[in-house]
Length: 153
Image (cartoon, rainbow, N blue to C red; front, side, top):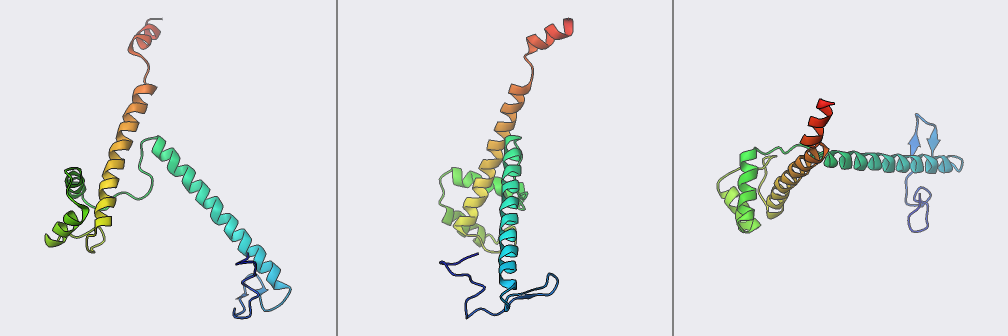
């Protein structure tokens, strides 16, 4: 664990870290290498979690499923926003109109162009996944003639 070639745990401006449950006290020379081992292990675990999450999301997308949190906004509002974006209205104009109409965001805040863009992309992604799932189902289904021949045999 280094920052610009320095061990951040040994810099003079750092306070000592004492972990009572694992017996590490970075104010002692013996514990500093242990703290580095624990930090490296934590970083390794973080990278493993990221890899597993990425793989899981990829599998879900291949199955035509959404990866991540379900949309919190009502579908009618999401589709309204996507339609207005598709019509060519500016993201800022849509956000301003939603704020003027006192339409709350999913978490009750103000609308911004970036929020409108996110909602529109979410709807586009949903449509793309639905098309991919339908295409996948069509390619996985047996040919009607082949199914009839198998049934007759």
